[in-house]
Image (cartoon, one colour):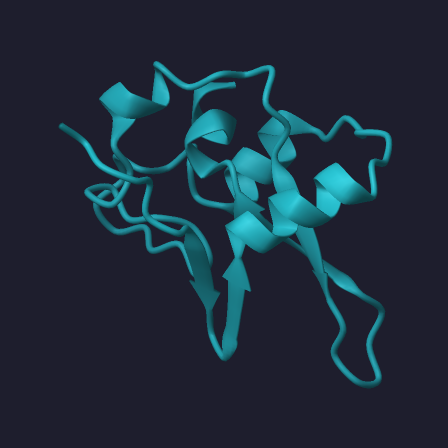
Length: 106
């Protein structure tokens, strides 16, 4: 028996994002999905360098923090969720908050 699904959260520095709230917002306020450059995003998140021992990703998972076997079972038809951080004095910055395993698989 697995029980109810646990809430999903994404933590980045001082920000905490509720994936459940983001999915609910998308459901109630649908919008068109947009394509993203998989290689650019995968590189930015360190997913292309997971096996390089001297490489540290500042925003992506560590080599042991990404379940590669699970990633290969993920549904690529489910869109990634990208939040936009509003930092005073700067344009909004995109941040992947859900879908790192799907990005790795892609």
